[in-house]
Image (tube, rainbow, N blue to C red; front, top):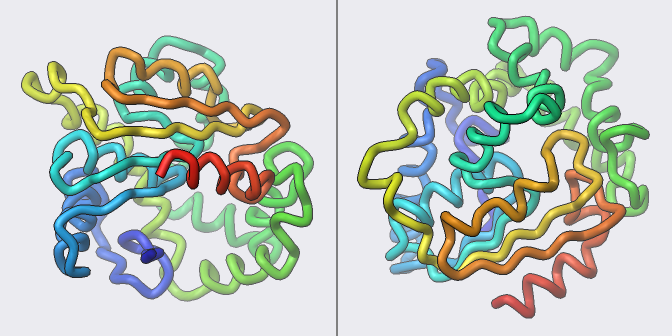
Length: 237
């Protein structure tokens, strides 16, 4: 098992240009990583933006993916049609529009001793429901990592590239192609950021799909109910 920091996270290289974070580059990072680790394929388990990238690898390079597990993130095509078609998802994605502004998101997140991380991980609205699953020590670790010089810009650039990815993501060949990799979607139903209906909107996109909804779980399902999440993953694998 290998856990990796994505491009621009932690101590990994943080390319300075926003367009270095388009999905084609992010996908290629994983495409090159799997053989670099000495494997011909791998099972990808990913959450949020990691899940977006894992969907891309499974869709475009299925020979590299044995199985796919994604937590609380839809395929980019499902997210695109949901945010374009529903006001509720537009409202939940308000921060994505704010994050298009240069430098302002970095300023907002860093205010009050990086209080943003306390709000999204342990706040009453967005935070984990199971407080034992994400301690104050965990929050402090996030604050330390993202308080390093330039550490916020790379992760924010993922969202800054969102509209570019919308415009360039699809091509005619891919639009007719389904994800053929066996796929498990795990979804915490109390996600403040993503509509839970998206979990069930992949029937026309994935040929071998299992969906497990996890009630009373936030966007951070793997912290809220790690025992059930791990059991679902073990059963699937």
